[in-house]
Image 1 (tube, rainbow, N blue to C red):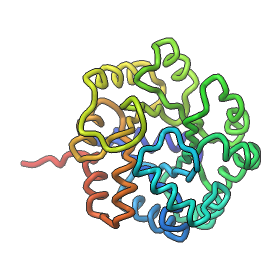
Image 2: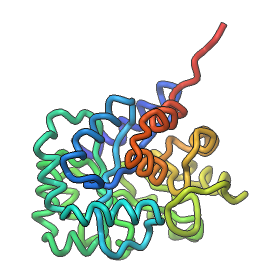
Image 3: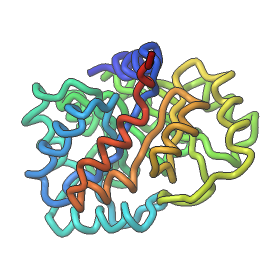
Length: 263
């Protein structure tokens, strides 16, 4: 799928009266043979897109739940190359956009041009690289542009306005609005400044804005989603998949859907 289809999927969710819902899963948690099952389950449950995390030995943004999932995947011998080979094998069954979240080192080791070619061949629509600063984005941008894959930027709460404007000006796919200062993981609440921060992003962004980090309950999906175009839910999804709590996952997804009109 192309980066335009990723954006259009998010916009469609909003136009239908709901919000986009993007679950994050750790590719290979439980073994790569489980990846197809997890993706198709989420697709059938009505997600907008799926963010696939690649296990990495030295993550900087991952909280305890996602770190543990990454370690489980690594014990199964999961690598970036193996993940791309796996999703390529069933790409014709995937109808929602896939976004890959990986750190820069595995991409460099893979070889940038080959990595991008394999992403395109596997149907990847977007890439998130949390340790790639805006100033170094030219490392990946030309190859991704040629392959029609979005390089999705993260915007933090502490980013100054001038930097946010630069990031937004070059944004593709969607803006990933980080809702907390720190790593991923379940949060009981969010700072008072978050709503204003999200609204400013919405006002200036030419692409949809999705909020992520710490969103883990139905109420948080609804409350934070109200300020943006959708939400990304990671740790709660990862833990629920690990424990096979599929009903909990469906409840989170359904919280992003339009509210039925009752008479």
